[in-house]
Image 1 (tube, helix red, strand yellow):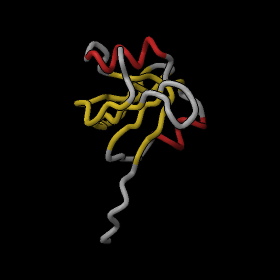
Image 2: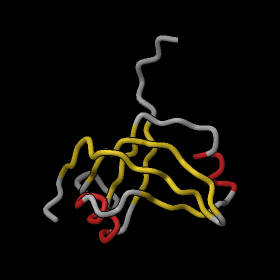
Image 3: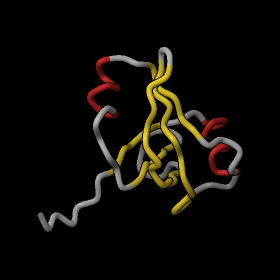
Image 4: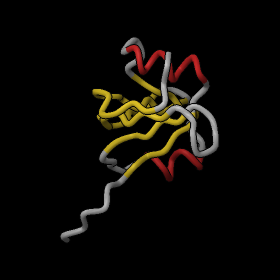
Length: 91
């Protein structure tokens, strides 16, 4: 019951989408309705989403408030809240 570990959804993004979220012009992220995403998104709650732009230890990274997920035709729509932190980004 007293589990203090944060639940983080980790997602990688191309630069253009990372930049749009960082600028505040993109308020949702979309994933295909596949079995893979179903297990990661349906019935789950996260403390926040960690977006990374690339792979490796020194890539741009941002934590964004999780506002839930909606099922839409053919995709999952992940609702984004405010940016909690932004690291290594010069956009």
